[in-house]
Amino acid sequence: MSYPGLTLTPVTVRLSRAEALALRMTGLLLRPHPTARPVGVADVVEWFGAMQAQDAASGLWSLGVRLPGATQDDVRAALERREALRTWPMRGTVHLVPARDARWMLELTGVRTLAGIAGRWRQLGLTVDDGERACDVLGAALTGGGRLTRAECLAALRAAGLDTDGQRGYHLLWYASQRGVACIAPHVGTEQTFALLDEWAPDPHRPERDEALALLAHRYVRGHGPVTRHELARWTGLTVTDATRAITLAGDLLAPVEVDGEPAVVDAALLDAPRAPVDDLHTLPGFDEYLLGFKDRSLMLDPAHAAAVVPGNNGMFRSTVVRGGRVVGTWTRTLGARAVTVKVQQLVPFDAALRERVEAALTGYARFLGLELRHSW
Image (cartoon, rainbow, N blue to C red; front, side, top):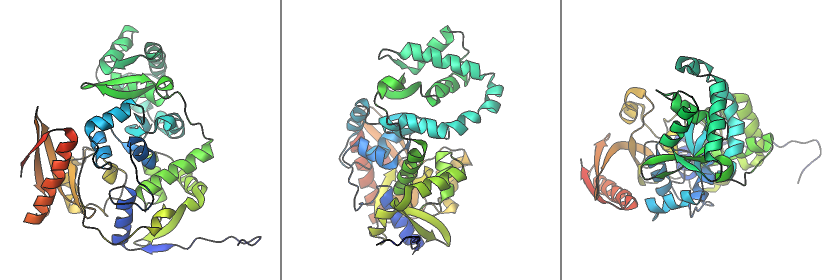
């Protein structure tokens, strides 16, 4: 029942850190969710809105770990069907996004990214005119269903008189994608390919700006919450003002909570999810929303272990062993023709039972790749 002139303020739910972690892992689709039961790549990517994928192999396993029983070939086939695509929608970083949403996400979040390139481009000897010329060249080269490898794209740029040496080629490809001309298509063999965004995703969703803000906020919060408006701003590259507005626009899809005395929001539907700690075990890729979706990672990662996960604090994340939502180890892989060899680094002591569970999880990863598992502790 509503009353004229009366505004009801939602009740803020206070969560313990354990409860907040349980809800976060549920939103990340690493625990059973009360409403979300994704059956394919399109479902998972749409759930998050965007998934970190600057490393293609990590992106594949980020999907595979959330789709039990799926293989790497299954995921690749879904990407060939254009259930999702890779581009640079936020912070100048490659993400998997729903194909129909790529254009509006680029338009919403790319403005500040494009505005911030001037200094770096001066160092590289690039100008905005070079970027616009690259858009014209790649647009023409890719028109008509063309799908070119990275090397072929760079060759087309050089043939047009653009210097692609050093990092200039990367930045020109990035600029053309950021401007919505190109997108990253699935690999052909081991080679990255590019396609024309308008042809790869010919039926784009075109929400108005407020609708787009609300949609982006809801997807981020439901896939990562509880989170603060500052974390939404960081993830999207939006201003804090826009992030605050986005949360407001999402309305009652989001619910206010408090963690450690700090206000946050969570997917309202998630408040009905079990909050009890679960002793689950995951072997996650390094570039996964589990850690990269947040600035404050203390719920999942002991600060004492941060250097082991991100050596040198250089943005290169190691793959993680996660028990009950907390990082307990890291792992690295070496691919062979018939087997994948995995080396595990323990950050806390593994007893025999935990070691057996880690080996079982890594066996699942090897099965995803279609390879045998060899491990070195």
